Structures are given as C-alpha cells and as structure tokens.
Amino acid sequence: MAVVGAGPAGLLLSHLLTAAGVDCVVVEARSRAYVEARLRAGILEQPTVDLLRAAGVGERLDAQGLRHDGIHLQWPGERHRIDFPALTGRSVWVYGQTEVVKDLVAARLAAGAPLHFEVSDVAVHDVGTTSPRVSFTDAGGTARRLDADVVVGADGFHGICRPSIPAALARTWERGYPFAWLGVLAEVPPSTDELIYAWHPDGFALHSMRSPSISRLYVQVDATERIEDWPDERIWEALQTRLGLPGWTLGTGPVLEKSITGMRSFVSSPMRHGRLFLVGDAAHIVPPTGAKGLNLAVADVAVLAEALLEFFSSGSQTLLDGYEQRALDRVWRATHFSWWMTSMLHTSGDGFDARLQLAQLQQVVSSTAAATVLAENYTGLPHALVGGPR
Ligand code: FAD
Ligand code: DHB
Image (cartoon, rainbow, N blue to C red; front, side):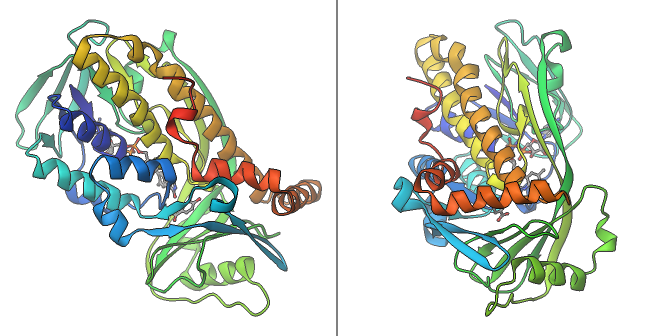
C-alpha cells in the first residue's frame, strides 16, 4: 500500500496497517522537522484518544496530555461551564497535533517501516486499475516508483491526490467565511483551567493551552487583516477585552509564534476513485471553532483502516465499497457542528445577528438538551455510532 502525506491521517493509517502486517510506504513532501513543528490543532476528542491508545501510541498522551471535562462559554458579564462527562460520559484532551505527529513518526521509525521525507514530483497513476502506482523523486534526487494494491491520499487540502480524480466525476460543497483567526502561542501559564469560547461585540476570542506553562489564544479578525498590523500589545489588549470578566485577569507573556488562518468549510466527493482513497483534509476542511479538523481525519482513518484490513486479509471489498458513505456521514455531522459553532460565536457587526447569537448561547447554557448536543459533538460520537452498522 502507498500513502501520500505524513500528517496525522497518513501516519495513523500506515501505523494501523503496518501493525497488522500490511506492507505500507509513506511519502511526505516536507522534512521530519517541519511536520513535527507545524502548529495546528490542540484538542483531541474521546474517540481519537481511545484509538491512539488502542494503537499503542498513547503513552506520552497519557503522561503529558491534559484531560478536560468541560469548556466555558462566555459573553460580556457571563461565563458558563458545559460539563462533558455529566452530559455524555466523555472528555477531551489537550494534546497538540505536533505531539501526535511526533509520536506516530517515532513509532514508525522504531518499527523500521518506510517513511520518505522531502520527496518531490509526487504523482499517482492507474488508480482506475487494480495495480495503481505512485511515482516520486526521493530526497537524494533519485526517481522512484511504488507499485501498490491501494493508494491513499492523505496529502491535505493542497495535495495532489484529490485533483487526480477526474473533474467530471467530482463534486464539491464549499462555504467561505468573512473572518479569520489570529492565533498566538505564548509562554505564560493558562489563565483558565478549561478552554474559554467567548462571544464579544468586537469579535470571538478563544483561550486554549498546550501545557501548564504554554497558552494558545485566538482572536477573530477580518479575513483581510495582515499579521504585520497586529503587534503583540494589540493582540493582548483585544484578548483582555474579549475574554475579560470582572475579577479575572489574563496573564501575558512572550509570544512564541503568531499567524492568521483563514476559515472555510469544504467537502469533496467522491472520497474514492478506483483504488485511490482520500482521508482527512485531502477530502474536507472545517473551520476550527469546533476543534474537529484533526479528529475528523482520525475518524476517516478508523473507517478506512478497518475496510483495508478486511481487504488485505480476505480480498473482500465490501467494507471498502462502504467507506465513502460511512466517512461522509461523520464529515457532514462535523461540518454542520463546525459551521454552527462558528456562526454562534463570530460577530458580523449586524445587531439582529448578535441578538440571535446571544439567544442561542443562552439556550445552550440553560437547556440540558441543547448543552448535550454541543457536548456530544465536541467530545466526539463513538466512531461506530456514526455511519451506520459495521
Ligand atoms: P495534513 O495535516 O495537512 O497532512 C497532509 C500532509 O501531506 C502534510 O504533511 C503535507 O506536507 C503532505 N503533502 C502535501 N502534498 C503532498 C505531496 N504532493 N506529496 C507528499 N506529501 C504531501 N484543526 C483543529 O481542529 N484545530 C485547529 O486549531 C486547527 N488549526 C489549523 C491551522 C492551520 C494553519 C491548518 C492548515 C489547519 C488547522 N486545523 C486545525 C486543521 C487540522 O490541522 C487538520 O484537519 C489536520 O492536519 C488534518 O490532517 P491530515 O493528515 O488530513 O492533513
Ligand atoms: C484549539 C483550536 C481550536 O480550533 C479549538 O476549537 C480549540 C482549541 C487549540 O489550538 O488549542
């Protein structure tokens, strides 16, 4: 099997298949240092953690990850806690995507399994036949070719696998948003025990963290903003205003990294073309507000790994034939949740929208039914429960 992309999806899928004895080669355009340092998601939902543990890569997660049993939802003058275990029996973990990637790379290298970094000219061929191929140039400049039974496109939104599906067969659904997140990683202990999602007339703000000594914070900015126009003092001021509550102060510290990330919803179908299967961001993107992107990539992998294991052990394609439908059911659930969280928390400047958002927030914090819907989605429905029976 050939896997294009060593992000969380490609690394986890190849880990699961290699552990079951399937020959599997991973090719990655970037260097090991780059993929291990790429700052992205920070929240793992319960089914993601369960899968990482079951796959034997949960040791450092259990030692260093922070289990969180809730989040705070806030608007001016009010902060309310949503209690996840009480509503769903599940929790989430603060454990950076960088750490997940490091754990999976380490496991793969320790197993002596093939993982080629810094490859170029990657192309997939003959995916409509039973002998597809991947060609690439390795880090040393040698042209290589992988003959496989199956090719997996885990190469993210800008990868080459999705565009290799004939345009006439593809369909996409997309929603852009007029705002973006300005994120900072700061060397300061978090000023909160659990994440704070804050609605404010100036715009959304989020207080997250990476460890007991590192905070991760975001503010909503206009999609056209440039990072040069946001000196550190301006960011801290916006965060203090939007996250502020009487009697509560935001701790500040040296900014280690800052950047602006655009937001979009995007779903592409088919997720399978012949012997090519797409997983994770290669097939779909969600805005970050519900912390679903990484978790959705892992959920795709859970479904595809089971189907591939059946295929490689018995030759049966029954589960492979059902992959797209099972994966898409969860993709659309997460797409709706991420859109809903984004719509509830980001301000547009329109007064009517603002009143609707506050009414929605009030309902979420005062109705057990509404809070449960948020908690179920945020902590992640068990993989087996989305996408129908196995
Ligand atoms: P990726 O992580 O994108 O991995 C794809 C891999 O393929 C990469 O290593 C890439 O280098 C490689 N690749 C690409 N093209 C090729 C090629 N031609 N040949 C070989 N390799 C190739 N989600 C959240 O839940 N919370 C967040 O805060 C959050 N922040 C984000 C910030 C940014 C800037 C981005 C881009 C995403 C963010 N996400 C966030 C989303 C989350 O990080 C992704 O959903 C997750 O990384 C998906 O994993 P993946 O393995 O499918 O794709
Ligand atoms: C983080 C990112 C998110 O998108 C989110 O909803 C919560 C936390 C983070 O990077 O820590």
